[in-house]
Image (cartoon, rainbow, N blue to C red; front, side):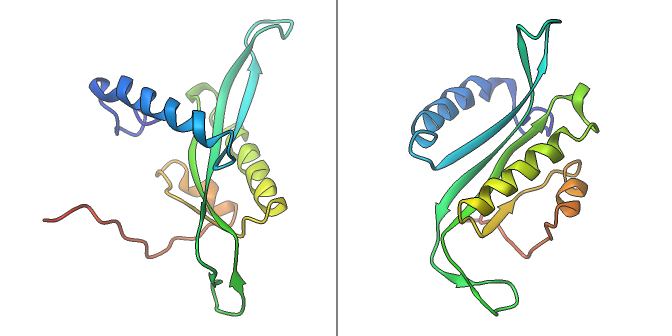
Length: 144
C-alpha cells in the first residue's frame, strides 16, 4: 500500500513491518484496531484463499464535541480509517466499497459516531460517494 503511494523506500520496509506487527499484536486484542479483509479463491476448489483487499479502523477516545452544524454532541471514540488497500488486479470491482460499507456498518453498530481518513487521489471518489467530505485539517511537521 505505502509503496503504491510512493511513501515507502525498500530500506524502511522491514522496519515498518516489524513495528506494525508489534502494534497490531497489542491493538487488535484490546479493541483499539479492527480490521476487515476480502479474500478470493487462489486455487480452484477454494482450498487456498488469497487476500485481495483490506481496511481497518483505529479507535481513539476524544472529548465530547459538537457535531458538524452544532446541533448535537458527538460522544464516544473517533475512528481513524487506515490501511484501505486493494490489490491492483482487483481494483474497480467494488471490493473496497464493500469493505468500507461493512466498516461503516460496524462503526454505527458500535457507537463510533465520528470517522476520519486521509484519502489518496485514487481513493477520494469512493470516500466521497460514501459521504465523506473534505475538512480543514492541518498537520504539524515539526519546528522549521
